[in-house]
Image (cartoon, rainbow, N blue to C red; front, side, top):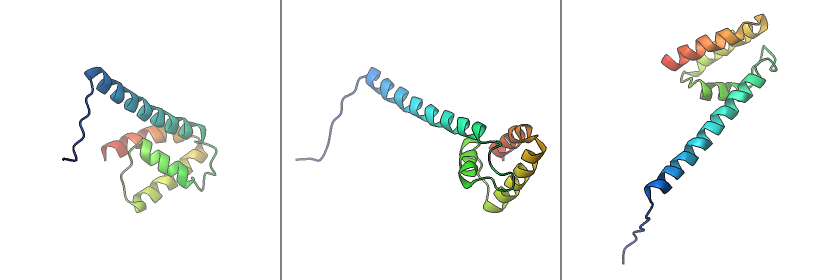
Amino acid sequence: MTNEITIELTREEIDDIFAERDSKKWEKVLGVYIFLRENLFQADAADISAEYQRKFNYFYQVRRNEEWRKKFYSLFSRHSKEGIVHRFVLWIGDCAAYA
């Protein structure tokens, strides 16, 4: 007696599994994007919430150390006060993605 389990799936069933998984992934990404847009100017400019930072880091794939992130969010706060944060976010998001 072996501990093997055999699962037989058709190509169509496998495609359906991946389509559902991809759909759920995009729903999550879209939800994060909507959160970022809706909360962009709602946080106190001097203190961007940890939740906002975490979601921003996830969405823009920021992979930097804590010191870098503190400096970044300090700049982010300053630019949000000046009303130019949208262009700043697009620019820094591109930089973070390629850093």
